[in-house]
Image (tube, rainbow, N blue to C red; front, side, top):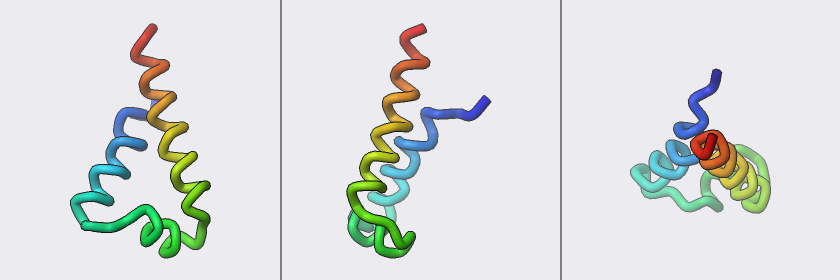
Length: 53
């Protein structure tokens, strides 16, 4: 089982620790900011959903 807490929150934490914006991360990954943001929200939502069971 994947540790979903980590994915969304860790990406955000590491991005902020490195002083990077979502725009910079998205550009380096060759994806849109919208896609990156939605992916992060998806993993955070998955974590919150699994915690409510």
